[in-house]
Amino acid sequence: MIWPFARAFLFIGTVLILAGSALLLAGLFRLGPNLTPLPYPKPHAVLIENGPYAIVRHPMYAGGIMLACGWALLVRGWITLIYALVLVIFFDIKSAREERWLVDKFPGYPEYQRRVRKLIPFIY
Image (cartoon, rainbow, N blue to C red; front, top):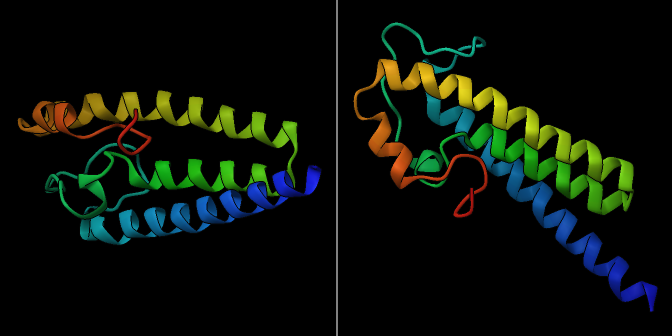
């Protein structure tokens, strides 16, 4: 009875990888000129609340998490799943700091935080 589970892991893993890639890229492109390699907003940045940012506040991080979880399911390795969990913790801590900067920069950010989940669409 291992085969049905293997197919389920393959299917779910593939869906997570595809969805995570789409979310990551959509977040990247939607930021446009606001995109910066630094973790704090540019001086003339505007708050983006539509597109992938209407689903989750950090779509690039969420996409990376989905990719990591999808890969863990594809390879069916506990170590890989632990790495994905570490990535969730890392992005949660990193995004918490970034959000303090965003609250300082954008007066409407607290309302945005109340409406949109942080890292896992519709969940967290």
